[in-house]
Length: 266
Image (cartoon, rainbow, N blue to C red; front, top):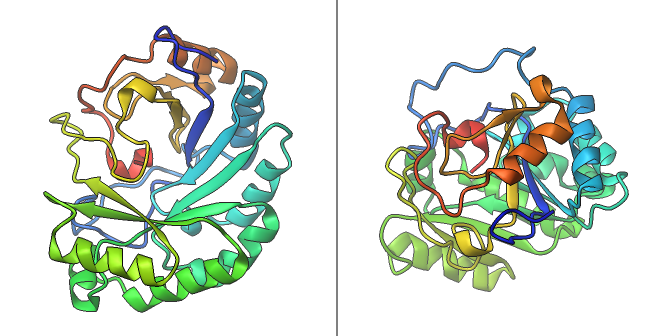
């Protein structure tokens, strides 16, 4: 699949839930947000249908996101369903790591190949402050479980305010070096203001080479994180929604006033 700027679109990021067990300061307010009703959330069968259609159109990579994907009931079953779709060469997930100790082995057996884990500091007190109550030891346990399960490479997503030379960023980088983890520095973004940069150590934010579409938990295909453009798979059908998203994928991001990171998958 190629868009009008000759970019090959072969990557689908799927938000399976807008729910999360943390309340990170840069993601959502302390009191939380109004969650989507269960009938608004795509079922596993609906998600699988979108994936099958996308594969037929040239999709090769799938990443499962949230909210926090591991709070979605039956997530291991969904991974197994997706991994059985012929044509998918890369199946990954982004998680905060809190529940990985419980799920890592089952996820690997279900077909998950690799995982990204969010970690902005290795200071337990600072972590609890950033996440509004999170237990960093559970993340460390999750990382260990992911390593033992063979979910390689394990990439650490670290949000930075200004520079990778910030104290917390330096300490996370050293932690990654000591534990055979790959780090990605993500500059703090603002959807409404259109503030974003290329991820250091990753591909996100590089509009020239952007190869991705996003499927939100309530069934919208979005061609760009920093855009309000979206097409409903329930209203248009999966193939029509995907083709429209590719046809109208912008050359670069602008602003997004209708979504938030917790419900679009970042």
